[in-house]
Image 1 (cartoon, rainbow, N blue to C red):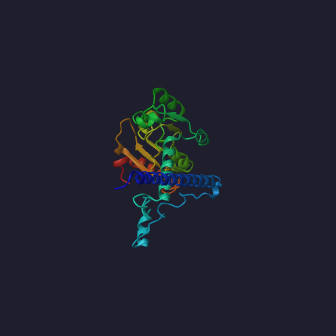
Image 2 (tube, rainbow, N blue to C red):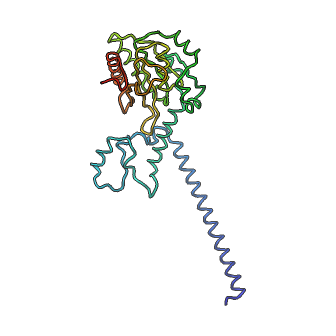
Length: 301
């Protein structure tokens, strides 16, 4: 049996060793903190042109798997989608670079939704603004019904300012991506208008609708008595791009028109259908709508 003095000595030894380990751990943590701070300072002091752009490589071209039976064949399929394939794993987690890329792409999507189209851009494009019944971005996101309608005062002002009874009314709306509007409208809108005018089609006064949903075009169509109405609107952004825009067209639109009455050209962005090319195509589709006097499922393209 251990004596009292031996037990006391053993306890004192254990306490002494614990103190030594704690001091060592504290010094190690302090050194680690210092190293991290130095690394952070080093990165933060780098010029922008020396920082690695993790979004420079398209997801179709990004590959970071440790093992792959047939990499060449895999990459052929991967080239057809921006989905996050072939990014590898660190245990059960994503690797650092794919995780940072995900966070960067998510930030782009958030900015596209919550930012507004700049006033300078609207002045440059000579687009007057009409606002839906939404007072702010929060209301727009939570009350889609208010984004489809205008006040009587706004409709009266629109009717006064714009050409009435146009054959085609084309206008722009922020929708769910203001970024898409500023990225594409400079090339798309002129291409549509010039394409239609070259066919002798009467085009109404272009303008901008703030906090607008797609179906706001029905109220515009009825208010201006347009034969065909086309809205160029920012689409809900994903992790592949925050710049995607679509064109929704309807023949003799009216409030409450079913979605099946709309013809749409989507994925207008630099990695999809380029803006100028999309504009020329939309003008051609509108001409077919006019000739057929139908849109949506009633239109046979």
